[in-house]
Image 1 (cartoon, rainbow, N blue to C red):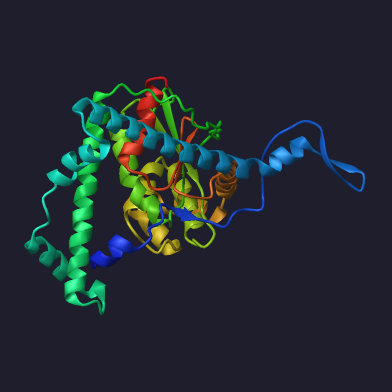
Image 2 (image 1 turned 90 degrees about the horizontal axis):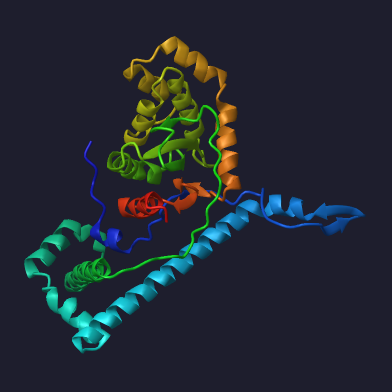
Length: 341
């Protein structure tokens, strides 16, 4: 079935989340020695506090790193631009004008008119001249941003840059029996926490497939379930995928759930099993028994303890990446890990 394309106006100005999220849990995590409090004479130990605060502190450490890394990237860019400007004997502003603004031709009237006509309903009651002016502004802005990124990449590629800011890294235990795609000897492990009803997980699936294709034999993927509150189909789907795994078809079933939308009710989940040629009686008995439910809950609890609050979430050799990320984000981390950095 064809889907109506999102209005251009909404695509440009709507806030877009990078993943599916849940309300913070009241459980876990953090650090110390000795007694930190007493309640009616009974001590609360630093170890108890560490355990209670661990997940929240993991999130704080990750957020701090991401803020510092973004600021570091900005500093690197400023240094590169300043050095190139000095080499040419001009100011940084003049350099960017010459390399960005002056090299981006204005968007044509025909392009503006075409984009406006394709998305006219999204502008509501906005007068056509104002709407077209806004389209022109945004298209020009996009073109300028693309050229700026290309120029900065040129500067990065010519420079010798060594980033020594260490990211937070956590130990992620892989339970026995967890679904794994890739050799145990792979130098890079990606542990993914996903929810089968999360649209961002569906969006991220193609990127994960690209990662596995780009690094054959060097990356292994470990699946961990993280069914979110408010997604009633996520837990049954996780159960069904585990049952497909009993017949050696976990990954085929998993990819079907990620790539093909459905109701995720019992009939849908059993229908997917039939299409894969699974033994219906065995699949049905497994699904009804709920014998994999504890594994699913354990995976969820482990994710919480590591600071996962939404899906998808990935740990690349213990380095966290949250949300539906582009291939470049994974490539950067994986290449650093393979290089031993």
